[in-house]
Length: 365
View 1 (cartoon, rainbow, N blue to C red):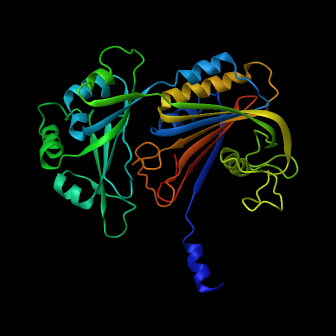
View 2: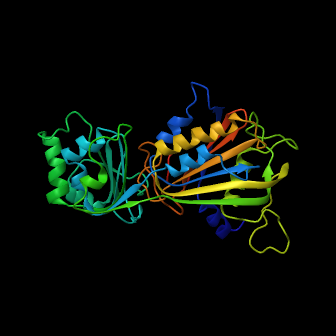
View 3: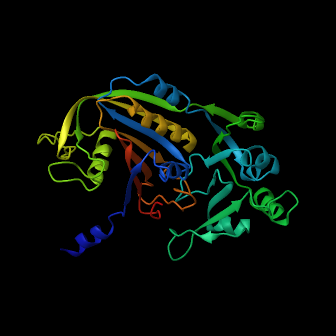
C-alpha cells in the first residue's frame, strides 16, 4: 500500500455503535434511562412496516410532543439567577441549548435537566471568565477550548454564597456571554410560572415541532430475530446490517443496487422480505426525553393487538453542535457531530437498542 493511501486510511473518522437487547416490560430494563440521559434531540423518526394508518392514541401522542421556545439575545447570567433556578430548575426538568452555534468554532452553553450548566468556550473567553474548568479532551495537546460546569442545584450555590456571587459576577460583569437559546421545560404539575411569561420582556417565540407523515410502498425490509443480535446466515440480519439499512431508508437511498445507478450500489441485506407499505413519521424540533419516553411507550402498546409487523423502529438524532451527548459526556463535531440512538421493538416487546457516536465522543453508556 502506498504512503498516500496509508495517510488517507488514518484519516478515516472513528465511529462507535453500541448495541444491547432487553425486554420493554422487564423491571431491570434500562431503555427509559438511556432516553433520559440523552437530553438534546433534534429529530425523532419511527418506521412501522405493514402499517398504512396510525392508531388514534399514537396520533395524540405525536400531537402532544409540545412547544419549545426560542429566546433571542439571552445572557447566560440570567440562567443562574435564583428566581430562574427556583421557578424552573428546581421545579421540573429544564432544558436550554444555544441556537445556531458551532461547537468547534463558537462559545456554546447548555443547561441539563439535572441543573448542570455547561459552558464550552475558547481559551480567551475561559481566561477572561476566571471560572474553574478543564481543557476540552478534543482540543489537542495545546488546549484551545475549555469546559466549565456549574451545578445550579448545589447546596452551596444559594443567593448569598460566595460561589454563586463569583459565578454571577464573572458572567454578568467580567465576561458577559449572550446567545440565542432554545428552551423547554417539563413539569407534571404544570403550575406556577411558564417560560413564556418569565421571559416576556425578552424576544421570545413559541415554536411547534414539525411533523411529517409518509407511506413507503414496496419496501424491502431485513428479516430480524429478536434473540439474534449478530444475525444468522440465511435466517436473519444483524443489528449492524439493520442500522445501515435504516440510514438508507431515512436518506431515501434506493435499495435496488441497479447497475445504472451512479448514486448508490447499496442493496437491502439478506434475508429480506418485501413489505407492501410502511408508515414513516418524522418529528423535528427541540424534543425533550420525557416526550420521547411517552412515544416509546405508545409504540410498545402498538403490539397490544395482533399486527402484521414483526418489528418497528424509533430513531432519535441529537444536535450535532451540543456540548454534551449522553449525560455530561463531552461532545465534539469533528466531521459530522453524530450522536443518535435507535430502538428496534419486536412484536413480543423484546428490543434492540443501538447507540451511535462519531469521532469526538466517549463510548455511549
